[in-house]
Length: 212
Image 1 (tube, rainbow, N blue to C red):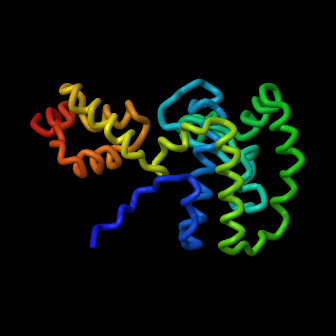
Image 2: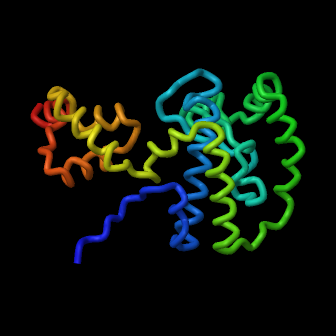
C-alpha cells in the first residue's frame, strides 16, 4: 500500500478533519498572516520587516473580536513589546498613531472596545470552521498567492520541481536562503529536497560558526 501523501494540495482542505485544538491554532495563525499581509509584512510604525508580529488592538482574550482582521496591527518586536514606545508598554501611542493614520480602523476600535466586557461565546468546531473559512476568503481577496507560500499550504509538484531546479543550479545557496527565496520555512525546503533525493548542503555561515 503506497504511503499517503500528507502535504496539502488545495486550500479547501484545511480544517476539514482538524480537531478543535487545531482549528483554534489555524484561526489564530492565519489571522496573524492576514493582518501582516494587509500591512505589507512590515511594522506600520517604523517599516521594519524583521520579527514582525500581529498585535491585537483589543485583547485576544475577547473572542468576539479576536479573529477580526480590523483588530490587528503589524508591529516589529520593539514596537510590539520590547521598547518603551510599544503597544504593550505605552498603548496610547499606538492609539494616537492609529487615529491619525488609520481613522477607519480607529473608529472600529472605539466601537468594538466595549465588547471586552461581554461574556465569551462557547464556540464549537463548526463555529471555528466558519471563522476559518471567512479568514481564508478575506485572504483570497487581498493576495491569493501569499497564503499558498505560508507554512499552512505546501507546494504543488510543479512548484517543488522549480525549487529543486533553483537549489541545484545555485550551488552557493543553502536551505535558509532557499526558504527566503520561496517564502516558506526551512523544514519545508528540507522535506522537499529529501523527497526528491537531493543532497542537502550545509549552511556555510552556520557551519563556520560551529567550527570557530
